[in-house]
Length: 577
Image (cartoon, rainbow, N blue to C red; front, side, top):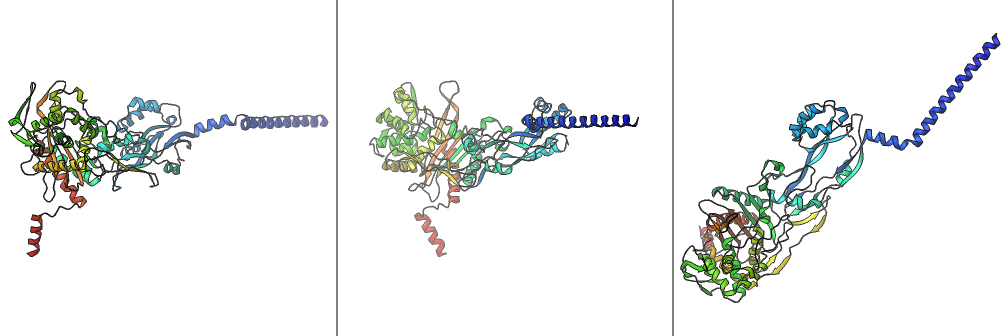
């Protein structure tokens, strides 16, 4: 009996041992299968649940003015992510987030109702938006440090700089044109998440290495600011629709200012009408009026006519075919000097009749009209200058005094600067250099002479004519400055009718272009005011703005006036007293 009982116990022990070893074998086999044969599959599954392959974009490069003042940079922002599997009522959450983020409820709900562990809800939101969402205490919504484009000078040079979209890519202006340089690099890598789906291992070192390059502009923050201030005052005073003011160094072609009014703030560009986004000084063409007489006179001088050569100006009314050209004031005989001084339309037309259409056309092309300046800004216009063989007799006359031809503000200022620069046309410059994210200079843009348009002698003679236009009895006396010899030319152009032939009798463009000092021009300035009310002559509207910008710029740059005899006498008198 005892023997049978012992045998039964031994059998049970053997069975338990067999089962135990079988279980160990099964567990070992399963472990071997998991670790060896299914390791890759399970690793992928774990990574899917607890890590996320995301694209990290480096901080966008900066934009500086010529003095290294920051015009565009990247400020700290917050990106919002979510773990949709943790969000129970996606519709209610989407409804709460939609008005804060400005994203449609349906789009948000689609993101938040998926079975994913991780998704981006919104990138680079403002701290204020993030704070509003944090106060909602929504389970499954998380916040990550990020960057957002920021313009510390607000609306200063906004049309030049442009702006970026939510993904930090350039949409307008230099931000768009130099996007490949400014844009930070991107890299995809896995970031680790905790059980709630929160990212906690973004490599900050990688972000720094991915930072974009920066560009240094020719613009001067101070001159840009004072140009915009004077322009705004002028546009408002004359109840005009808009205005532009450009400042250039004639000897280099560097632009120190491109001012527009109205302006906009690129930090919140969506609140503005998109019509103000364009850099109209480069993208838009207009008929320049009598400023073109400067180049008509230059063409005559190059053809061998002396400045004192006279033309009969028909006492203020001259008929060409069925058209009649008129002057503001009647004149009989005027020299080329006087045609510029008194801005005679008839005199300009007579010059072209004498030198021929081809001579005028060739010189206008040489000055850069009808072609892009290649400044490197998106949407640059060619302007409009038809081949001379297609000109009628009245076309030639009209073009000689600035109608029937359209130019950009940049083209016009560049051509005026060529006169100031001894007849040498310079390529306009807006970018001085590109620098790396560590501050090293990668590329330098240097002044580039395009061609000698007219001789230095002709340029000097035209300078003298332009100084007469600003002197007593000239059309641009309101641009005159004490202590400086200013050279300039007014322009008043009737605006062409839209969708009709002919010109408006109530809408004008007022222009003044010039430079100073005459013998060593430091700055060239162009002011264009569109549709001023009441007064509309360039000498009354644009010339005073030119003077104010030039005076303030000279004061800032410490360009001292010449010591003429009256100033010396005053100085000696004060010294004696």
